[in-house]
Structures are given as structure tokens and as C-alpha cells.
Image (cartoon, rainbow, N blue to C red; front, side):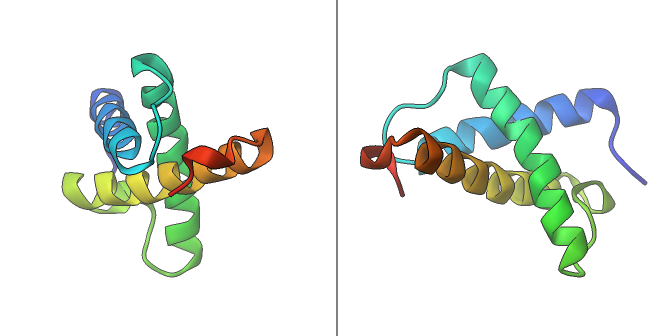
Length: 90
């Protein structure tokens, strides 16, 4: 059973906020943190499903947030690596 639209928005907000706190430097702002969290959920779900853990929507809310945070941290790291903002890495 997957999550609904409201649950994914909540997961995105929480994952984006946590990612903003985990990564050194400033975040991207509230809206972009939410977008990074939602895209991070997709990235994390893709990686988790291909590693045999199931997708982000296959688990409860806490595990979905955890998977989304991992994906958002990886996404933020890659964006900073590509953009050259290496002073704000992990």
C-alpha cells in the first residue's frame, strides 16, 4: 500500500528539512528543500528497490522518510558536486 499525495508532500517537507540540517552550508529554501525531498524520495526509492529493500512507498511513514532523506542527501551532494559548491559538502 502506497502513500497518498498529502503523505508524499509531508514526506518531502520533512526529508528536505532534515537534508538541509544534515548537509553543511545553507539549504535551498523552504520550497526547494521540499522539491529536493520529493525528488530525493524518488531517488531513494529507486535505489532501495534496486538494492532489494523495496521502494519508498512500500514501507511505513518513518522508513519512507528515512529512504527519502538518503536520496535527498545523495541528490544534494551530486548537485553541489556538479555546481562546484564544494565548500558546503558533508
